[in-house]
Length: 206
Image (cartoon, rainbow, N blue to C red; front, side, top):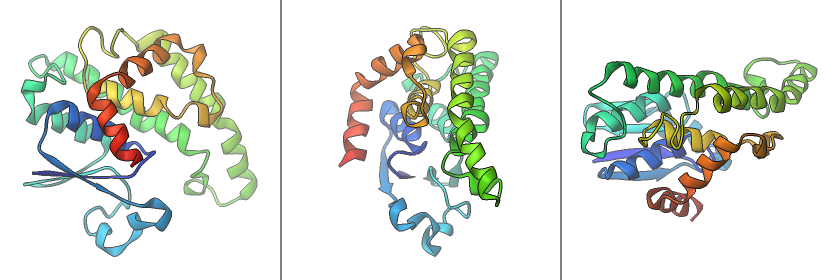
């Protein structure tokens, strides 16, 4: 049995959806960020980073969304969430998910997590003001250069899709109008119609 530690309205949604899509046997454990449960000693023993997601497996814990998504795809090959028999195509998915993790998510985090990078209030404020521009530029790159359609990597649904869906859901909150990215917006609509996605969204909203 796998255990996913997650919090609503965070990037852990991508892993949650992937587990559901894979038909995995798993338990989802919610953390309450408003009560700083991710910083409590009990959770820090599980993930010293104090963040989500974490996937607990029989061999140990896995952190970081791209790693968790790849693990789910590799341990549930019948779900066909990645082209496991094509090293180049699998690397392409890994490259895209790494971009979401290392660049797009970081651009988003500057709005509310500026204290990670600076102590000066003026600098933190300046970083927050830059978020909408940076996020728009990131999604313009995704829209114009990388999105294959109808799913992120082309005809086949993959682990790139729940991750894109998750981060694209932050656009409005970051002051970006998603209508300027019709491919991404159409993808978001298709994702929201998938039964597995609906189940996860309902569970996280409860």
